Structures are given as structure tokens and as C-alpha cells.
Image 1: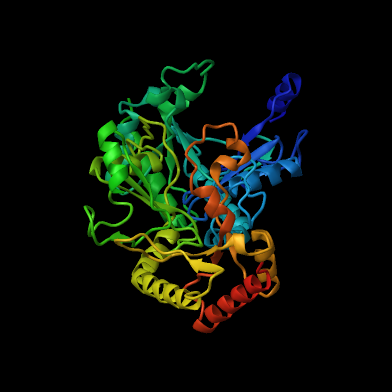
Image 2: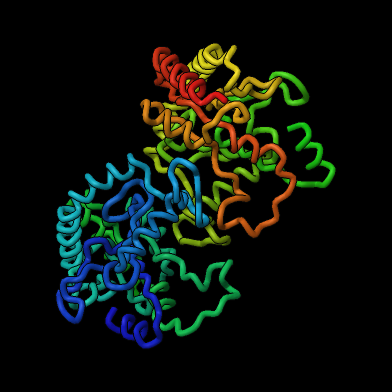
Length: 241
Length: 241
């Protein structure tokens, strides 16, 4: 974020933080020590989709450094009503607000956030132990100087030391009752964007080729984590060159 | 709809029915006898906003004559996932689906729809009686040949026979504890569209100038309806030229 904010300042750019998965994550060192993800740029976006650290079933939240910008987002996302009784809309509005049921769920979920984060951190440490001295796969660390919400656990596989493709590994694990996931498809490789400008893709294709994401529900048990790790190690060992 | 569909056929146009408020309304005579609003054109849209005849808190539903079109709408409104496990998106997708909580509410609400429509019809008839021989305001009828859901009750006021403006009338009623509403602002008069082409606005400005919508909750009581009608008549009588 320090580098991004420096570039933004130099070129007078607005920064929109995609903090969709990062609710509760914060810096504890550096220029932004104490600051939460999503509150450093000009705008921040959080997702409350079903798979996120807290959920409202769908939807999310936006933040802004400028209170006027928050008001404006509220205005255009609530049909841009300038007069609630006479239907005056001085801007083109949208119907993007959360329902009252979703908001109620969100309030209750928010109370659980510290507990969910603790659980995610504990589960991460357990996974980390399970792969500590394992040469074919290592759990990706979180950014130094941050207190991450540990939402997701990514295993970097030493593809140069095994036979199987990533898809084969995912399929083999699926057959053992362990659902793992590839990382999200890279945007510049998606059909609608193949004609778009894409440059300096240095690390993304590499990670895309060698990462599987491990089960990360806050409801997963220690036994299940050990089982997952055992199956992953076993499948990878079996494919060793 | 007959005229609209004739024009669409002649010029090979697609028809999108804005049936947002018309759920459960149908034709009982003419070419579309037995057909529900929203199911005659190529596409239909229903709203389940909080003020509609059934609600899911927000959101709605779309219909299409062509099953492939329904599938395509489901696809693009659910992030255009071509492969649920490997995040392949062959079109630009959106996140417009309803949450599971909203859907559950909607299913329960749908079961109540016939009851809500009956109540709306009963309340309409009661309002109609209340204004039957009243020269200063008459309840707008519903389209002939249709079995309307009677969602909303519009009173057409004889503005040429009274002193007050429509806003004055609404304010006076508000002071007596009766909330009435002007009809929605005309789109061509809204600031963002004032530069847009607008033509053949024959009846809309007239209705906009003389209609108030009366309280129409399915939970309104007969006594409340009589009170509302009495206050409306009283306010209008007091302003008589």
C-alpha cells in the first residue's frame, strides 16, 4: 500500500482498495501501522458474499476517506432520491442497497468477526505445521508487517518436482473427499478481456500454475485439517518425480 | 399489450414488459386472455421491493418467453461462470442474484399472493364506494378486460374545481395523519434526462398534476380506509372554488 499510495500521490490518482476479502486485516508496522485494509486509499470495498469471512448472503460495503463521498455513494445506491415524497432524482440512481434482513445478518456476523479471525489464524498455524518440512508444497505466508484475517490458505506446489498437473492433483484430492480450489482465473486470460492491454504479468501466471487453496471454513475441525494435509501430502508424494 | 405487440411484430422489436408492480395481474378477455402481465412480451420484470405486492426486501425476478434467454440471464447474473471450479468466465458477468434468505422469504410471500390480491381488491372497492358520488375526486379505474392485482389506488382530483395545489393537498392530509403520495416523477422532467428526446407526452403531465395515491397496505383496516376517504373529501371540500 505504501508504494501504491506513493504512485497515486505522484500522479494525482484516486485509489480504490479491493479489500473484498480483507475485512479485519491491518498493518502493525510501517507508515500505515494501525490502519485496516480498505481504509487507506480514497475508497475501499468489502464483500459479504457467502464465502467471505463474514457474510450477509450477498452484497458488501464501501468505505471512503471523505464523508461527502460516503454520502454520495449512499445517495446513488439508493435511487438518487433528492425528494423522498415527490420522486425527484437529480442524478441517475441505482438500486444497490442491502436489504434490512441482510443488514441484520451483517450486524450479527460483525460481532463474530474477532472470533472468526482467531479461528482462521489457528487453522492457518495448524496447516502451516502440517507442511513445515514438506518439500513438495509450502503454505504461502501472509504479507510481513500485517495482521491478516487469514481468510484463505494457499499451498504453493513444487510443480517442477512432480508428474501431475494441477488439475490432476485437484481431481485426485476430490476423489479422496477433499475439495481444493485453483486460484481465480487471471482476468487477462478470460475470453472477454483477451483483446485488452495486459502487461507486467510477472508473478500471477506462475502462482496460477502451482497454487491450490485448502479448505478454510471457520467450522473445519482440527481432525479435518490433519486429514486434508495428510491427503495432500500423500497425493503429492505419489506424483513425485 | 395488443397494440404494443402489433408494433413490435411489424418492426421486429423485442418487448420487455415492465411488470414490476403487476405480479398476478392478467387479461381475461382479448387476444391475451388468461395471460399474466410480464409473460406476453419477450421479457418481463417483476419487483419484490418493500412496497410491492409481495416482497423479498429488495430484488425481483425476470421472465422470458425463450428458455435459452432465461438460462442466459441466470448465467450473466451469477458471475458468468462457465466452470465453477476453475473460474472461467466467457462473458462479462454480474453479481445480481438474490440471496438465499431473500429467496426463502419470496417463496413464503408467493404463497400469500392470492390473499394479498383479494385484500387489495376488497380495499379498492371500499375506496371506490367512498368516492362514488364525490365530484372533486374519483378513483382511477383499472384497465378494462384485465383482472388487476389492484396494487395501488390513485385518486384523480378535479384540480379545475379547487383552490389548492396538489402539494398543498398532500401536506394538509399529512397534517391529519394521512400519508398520500404524488405519482412518480416523469422521467423526461428529471434533471439527468432533460436534454433527452421526449415526445408525445399526452396524458402523463396531466395525471402527474392531479393524482394522489392513497394508502394501500394490505394491512390497512376498513376503518382506516373510511378515515382516509373522509379526510380526503374534507380537505378537498374545504378548497372548493
